[in-house]
Image (tube, rainbow, N blue to C red):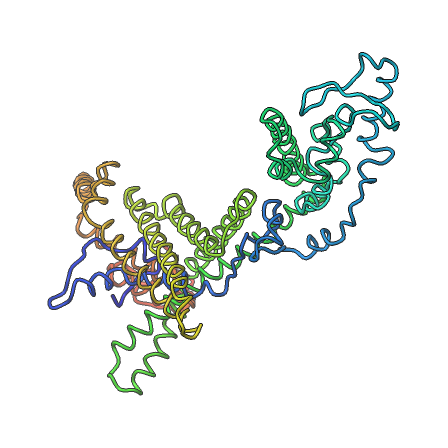
Length: 535
């Protein structure tokens, strides 16, 4: 495969053949070495320059609540850590003092009770009985004295890392209508600052009906509490913390996009350099000096080839940028609900890289290809990505299995990467070979009615029919079209006016066209006052 194509996935041939004396294993890798090599170099070699964090790269409410309990979790941004550290000490006066909603509800109920003690009692939300405001005098039963209870303990609200991240006030959340319930003084003081689930766990003597009402009230309060925090953090754009969250997410996505763009572009460049150097070494005289010169020559050829294919290089960079942005955004959204591991971050990035490249092939690929061929090429990209993802899984499992084994850490890493790379190569080759052969390829051809050979035959017959109508030699026409296409390809890679002139002259000569200047030169014609330029 000395003459390899730059966009190798779209150019992989279906005419797979095994040379005499060649093993099937070697033949398969020879056929698909480009796509497998680049998949491995980008997924296992260049990934070292991209750091995936446990829990993503942006602080979310779900993740910051794990800080302190999960040893792997930490704040992604020091400012958010600082805001929590400087939240201040909790004081019940902040949520129950003058001017609070807590005091206002109590004062309103007490005033109403004093106006009509018989009819203006309050109902115990947990034990379902009437409660009174007896004042501070002794002798009144505490199980009938009204107390206002924070369903979610106010101290827990104050110490909630999610509340601090969302930028909400302790008093506003703790004193919300859904978090305040009337209950009797005996039960309220027994609970102290404990949450209802924690209190019930330590007091099994609480009757089942009371237990159910307490848990129902707690669940409802938690639902309202979480809704308030989520709304403030992710949907309230008047909240500066919400705006900061999206700024952080955008900054991280842009950074990850550039990293992935560089990964894809450098992977493409390394692939060109490797195969150019390899082909040059294969063509050398076999001596050490010849091999060294061949490597240098091959690398130069690889650089020149990459320079000529700059459009492909930039396309790879653009696809990497897009996949990096989408991967970062996806990771951030997932971490709003779940916590992703560093391994999951790699899988998300590789998945998006494959999806973006496959989508680019299907919708923006070579329009001269049939849709079924573009879908087949896209399927090859997905297959290579799937192979890389499985390889990552194998690498992760091998790393875990080697933890108790006594060997240098560096050697463990080498063994794990080797196992993952080997798995990626084997699986990718298997999937690519399967796609290129009957089951998948024929299904696509059948689905889109695009039997290439039949359509090509019809096209050629139509050309011959049109040529006969116009009295044109169809063989000569095809040769001229071939010459023109070759000239266009050569002109696209020309680097100087001299090269352009040589290409045009050779094309005119190959096609047997009369020159504009006849047997003379341009200088001779320009000096002839009677000469008229004709085409």
